[in-house]
Image (cartoon, rainbow over the protein chains, first blue to last red):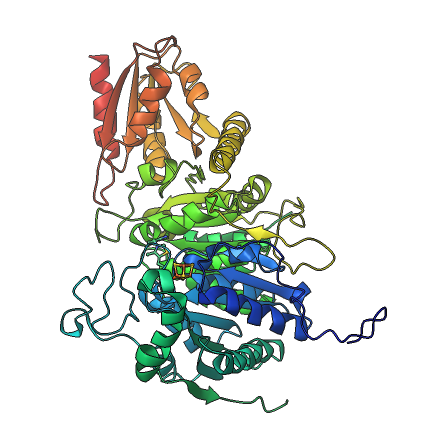
Length: 256
Length: 357
Ligand SMILES: Cc1ncc(C[n+]2csc(CCOP(=O)(O)OP(=O)(O)O)c2C)c(N)n1
Ligand code: SF4
């Protein structure tokens, strides 16, 4: 794109679908990056006017104020059910369910699995920060073994509370999902991959291909008790070894 | 003119919902209302609607939330234990001011209870049921015809007031077959374009939510608006029926299946020359407090009859025993059975005969 007044090239601007207002996220939080990637995808696919975004209960509950599309709240864990209701009525709209790990893998496990198993033509963006951010840093179903949280002060003991759950691998046992991928937003390289994956999970819905899921390993410096810099490193050191990045499922539509 | 048909109560609810324009139905099976999902599973796919058996009542009520937010007429149904699970969702629907019709074909409780009809969920239905200061309109049909008529009306009330309307039946009504005239759609139109989620095309985004953290009085303002709406409903939407109550000295008060038993008792008592009458609340919330107070003006005794341990009884007391009312000295007696048992007509008749002694 060229600016007509001066001979300069516009190389970056805020996504049009991202609302220009201060947000409530902590410094170094991954949610903001993911919002930007999602709104970029919405812009590129030109679907702002037909997107309905579902905010979960969690730190991103107010995300509908940052994304300039129709927004809907869902009770804790129930976003895939709300998405199902919306999509069954508006088959031509793009329904995006944005969820944290407590929401998607603890209280909402049943809704997660069954929406995926039905192959609802929706997009699920799963933000895995291995902690309950909103309520002040309690253990999540994805908290790592020996990870200290408010409710695992001696470190998560898998013998007592089980191993952390891997969402992509779990959903990959089902027939219906067409796309499952795990990404991270802790460095530029990973962010660029996440950007591609997010566009893919949204585009799949636009093309009516089916249920598409992306898990994003994301920083929660506040919940982890780390500096933003340390949090970025912790994803490489601790999270990725347990939650390997990569694509688990990629079905292309026959007619695309 | 609609023809007369013979249908089972539960199936009538499904058919009446379809007549009312409901094309979305989400539910999880539970006895004694399983004919409703079965009926919807047969009918909805054939008329371009959606029937979906949810993975739980939690999922079902939240699918209802999504479909309602999308602007559609939507219904779910269940029986007592399933309705308990739906309470969180009903509270969210109420907070977000979304219309929905929730059918509860009440069964015996508490706990898993049994699968017989009961009225044990009166408190839960009329006090909101979930968390927070909210109400649902509660309609209590007493016949298969009324199941049909009130189902159609429930959708209009839900859309008009943007709130949850509960159809509170019981296992007996659902299983009962009676002849009825299928109702006509009301033809009322409700404009949802100012809030429904349809994609922000050519307008600012709509947001459906119930979280109101700031600024400080935001949540109270919503509550005050809800309360104002509830006062309006109390003024405009009270429904009740009376039977031989004009000159009655003994007033039986019952809703739903209990009211049918009361009616039989009134007939027997009247044949004996005992002036008995029936007052039947049709809206359990808003409760017909004023009407019952008026009806009780010249009454010697009120007998509440319920299939529970005395839940509506408390609303009757609240209505009659206010310090300013002329009925504040009226004696209120109670006859009830619990756990899916039905009050016996002879027992009610005998009770009233004894008042004469
Ligand atoms: C029914 C219910 N139970 C508990 C809560 C409290 N609660 C709010 S957010 C949350 C966990 C959020 O964690 P997560 O889903 O991982 O999202 P994050 O905040 O980390 O982004 C909990 C337990 C609630 N709001 N509703
Ligand atoms: S608590 Fe964690 S997830 Fe929540 S805003 Fe802060 S950094 Fe982000």
